[in-house]
Structures are given as C-alpha cells and as structure tokens.
Image (cartoon, each protein chain N blue to C red):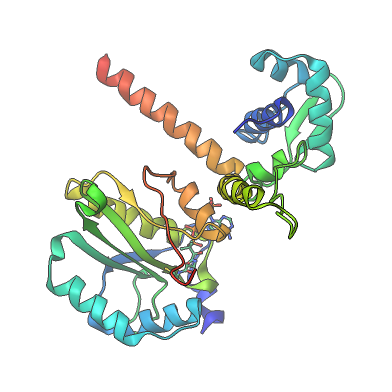
Length: 144
Length: 165
Ligand SMILES: CC(C)(COP(=O)(O)OP(=O)(O)OC[C@H]1O[C@@H](n2cnc3c(N)ncnc32)[C@H](O)[C@@H]1OP(=O)(O)O)[C@@H](O)C(=O)NCCC(=O)NCCS
C-alpha cells in the first residue's frame, strides 16, 4: 500500500510533535529532518492545524506544537485529511461476474487496510518507536 | 453496582491485585461476561474453570483482577484467559488469549493492560515467546487495545467459508 507524500509527512510531523507536547518545531526544522521543502510541509501543517491536531505559535522561535489527543487520533484520521482511502467500489447489479469477482478481492484487501489504519493511534506509534529504541539500546549494551 | 466501583480506584494508579481464578469468582465472571456480551453462559464458564484448574494447569492461565486489599466479596474488575497451544496449523507452541473482559465502569484505567501484562509474564515464565489472539476487524476497541500493547498482524490469516453458498 502506498500513501501520498502529504499523508506521510503529516504522520511524521505529528509523531515528532506528539512525542513531547511541550515541544515547538518550525516547519523548516521538520522539513530538514525529513528532507522536504518547507513549502510543501507548510501546506500539510496548515491542514493539520485546521483539524485541531497542531497549534501554530507565532513569534520568534515560533512554530507548531501538538494539540490533538494522541490516544484517540488514528493513522486513518490523519490520512483521510489528505487522501481518500478507497472504499468499496460497490459492484452494481450491472457489473459483469468478472468485475464483481475482482471487486470482492480488492474490497477484502481495502477492508483490512482500513481496519488496521483505523486502530493504530499516534500514541501506539510512539510506543512502537520507543520499543525499537529500547531494543536497539539493549543490543548495543550486549555488544559493548 | 457500577457507581461505587469507579471510586474504588484512583484513576492515576489503580490499586489492583491479579491472581488465579477461584471457584468463588465464577459467579462474578459469569455476571461480568453477561454484562459485556449480553449472554449468560454459566455452563461454559464452569467448564473452562474445570479445564483450567484441573488439567495442564502449568500452561493454562485464567487470571482475574480485583481491587487490592479487598474485603471478601467485592466484584471482580476483569479477567483474561489463555493457554499454550502447540502444533495447530503447524505452529510452534504459542500462547493464545481467547477471553478478556474489563468491567465497563472501570475501563481506561489500565486494568486491561495489567491483565495483558500478567498473562504475558506467565507465558514468558514457561518459555513461550509468542502470544496470539483473534480480534474482530470491525471492533475498533479491541483492535486499538491490542495494537497499543504492541501486537501486530501475525503470519497466519483466518479464512472462512459460508457453507450455505
Ligand atoms: C479491551 C478491554 C479489555 C480494555 O480494557 P481497559 O482496562 O479499558 O484497557 P486499558 O485501560 O488498560 O487500556 C490500554 C490501552 O488500550 C487502548 N484503549 C483502551 N480503551 C480504548 C478506547 N475506548 N479507545 C481507544 N483505545 C483504547 C489505549 O491505547 C489504552 O492505553 P491508554 O490508556 O494509554 O490510552 C476492555 O475495553 C474490554 O473488556 N472490552 C470488552 C471485551 C469484550 O468484549 N470481551 C468479550 C469477548 S472476549
């Protein structure tokens, strides 16, 4: 499954900011970390702001901070701000059997993708990232 | 009963004890399960109790959560049931969780997580390092809970066939 670049950027930015709700980051800082233009990212942040997930802070050292609920915001909530996650095409009564059969398969796949994205919250992603760090730390300690 | 229960626990740090099920808990288990699923299944639970407390007890875990330092008769706050299953579908031994409930009035205070961790510890202690469960895809609460505990899609996929077709 592929996500549009805006959706990915939005998720990366939210993970950066939600990891520490006190933290403020400028568009340039986030853009630098993920190698994207501030121009593109600014639009993404604007959309996240309208959805109430980030708050913009004006002035020197301004930027964005996280203002959503990390435990209740799912990946699907974020992605659907930027793109449509295909729903059932809905084979109609006029579809051929072949169209119907292929639709069944594609719908099955979409259904699983949607259920997965709809159950993983920003908080769950952050926990997953912490687990990875911890595992890497343990590996390094074992090697040292 | 619900009203008093919320106040037993300090939401920031629920004081609970997790232990093996006892016969005296069964009525509470049946009642909690009925409140959650809408179906009373006393026979089912007595049967599970028998199997879990009499045979292969080293690899079957029926754990309950209760308020810590409780008087004798406080109702349970939740339970989790799981066992080691080996070689089904060619799988190496792994721990299966197949029943899990937290009292609706005391949810979102970490009791589910404590039960989940307790059964994980039991499996780990007998050398089992994979745990599985099955979740209804449409049940966002269950999906979100198990994901938040670090569970991910496993290597098996469940298939079914409608035999009336
Ligand atoms: C799933 C269940 C066991 C969770 O129990 P709980 O005590 O509320 O869970 P916890 O408080 O430990 O929650 C742990 C994590 O799960 C997730 N979670 C729990 N409830 C959630 C909800 N309503 N929405 C989204 N995520 C939720 C959260 O990530 C939570 O972590 P957080 O508190 O840091 O946000 C409980 O909701 C339940 O019993 N549901 C019904 C079970 C059932 O139908 N059983 C019968 C068939 S077996």
